[in-house]
Length: 430
Image (cartoon, rainbow, N blue to C red; front, side, top):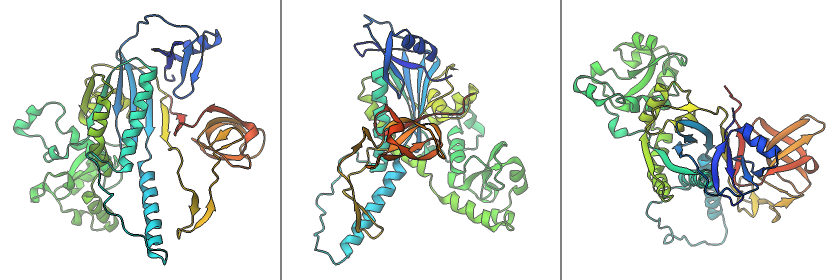
């Protein structure tokens, strides 16, 4: 079943979301019209005085690459989405720009005096790649607040607390720590080692926490000395030194030793931005609930729900029971608003092509979501995707299945104007 449909009255006052079937009936009876395509929203053609709305909780599971969003209406998950960030792309673009500027400075060009006094950073400054994650989530929170009567927000505030991950083995008095003891460590290791056995690469099996340097020979309980292994590999290794155990597999040995010392970049990004996002959400004035990553995973396993970002979002905070009414979340990908380059440089930094100042051609601009019906050719059929426009009228289209080209403007019909994001729906419908 698809997501519930957002509803507004004629005064743009948010009402309770309705099932897709009810929305189709309202549109067919001409009682409502389509207000927005993504997220799909309808607007009544009449006002609703003093509407009675139910409580809706917006739940957020922030991630480094993908953030889960879910709306819970009295223990019912009525809407879900997965927001994919572009932090790595921003980092790569900034590094490319820096390389071009440095090479230009070193060439025999006019002297450019270095400017160091204008580089002060305000309090709470974040790198652009991390700030974009906060801005993306904040943008979608504001959009949802306009279309749904949200009464509270839940955020997964702490994903990994590395200071509390030094002793995953429970013994003695540590049994009093409760049901969530050790969840933080296991979740950290699952993401760091790709949810598979470090020794044989097995995935569809139960994984156990394994000490790289045996604890009986002085190995520590720190996360840098922990990995994941299947029961067979864990038993075979025993308390042997890893160099002896993998003497005939030097490639696997070097990979494990190298990966064990690497920090978890995604976890660091989430931990860095968590308080900036928390303070941004506080500005909405709504009650704000926070939870840990261990609590989220515990709720999901207890309720026997599948692993996905939007399901994790629905499990954030205190959850007694959940009834998932949708299985097809909205997939949102941040694409940005283009760039401000006046010319395109080659790999040496010299301009090779100048950009036109006109952004709209034949009524379309780059970033528009369109529906194209191609009558012939390799890509004949119906396609929905994001356009890249050209002055010639022969466009390109990016769809969830890949690139479609050429797409002539006369075959395109706009369904959603560019707003900095690309949209699709999950095909894994249960």
